[in-house]
Amino acid sequence: KELGPHGIRVNAILPGIIEGPRIDKVIADRAKQLGVSNEEMTERYLQNISLRRMTSPYDVAAMVAFLLSDAGINISGQSLGVDGNVETL
Image (cartoon, rainbow, N blue to C red; front, side, top):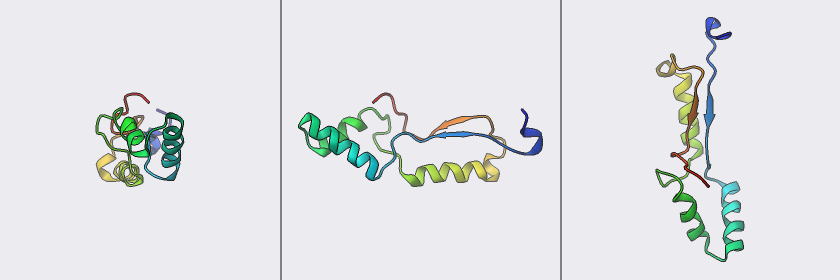
């Protein structure tokens, strides 16, 4: 409301689990705690994501690019999940 008249759009991107070394370590540590393989632990995580895939850094960057483009010109004041619909972890 305050920034819109100045052409400034404000949105929040909620990325969920991002593919990469950080989640790989989380999965490895949890798998070790439970005595299961990393692959099984990964599958358990994916069962809580509707699209059954982790978010890539590219997915988040694509949302940022969309919001900055003319296609996102009328989007403001939104919280946008880029997480494949994480249900619970």
